[in-house]
Length: 65
Image 1 (cartoon, helix red, strand yellow):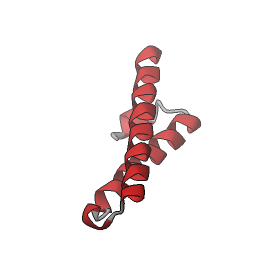
Image 2 (cartoon, one colour):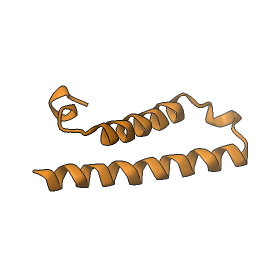
Image 3 (cartoon, helix red, strand yellow):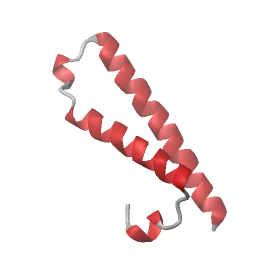
Image 4 (cartoon, one colour):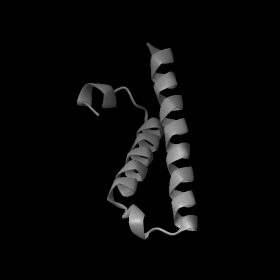
């Protein structure tokens, strides 16, 4: 995220952004071929939650402007 956008995030929003970015990074490095069904479901649910939170965060930032 560009520094100009980060300046507008409050500490709670920054924490949420960092957690969402971590979830995405972890999914990118996962070897999908070796994941079992349960692990795949957990990863998908984590990504769904992160996407939902990211969209809420974007909405909060839009509402501030």
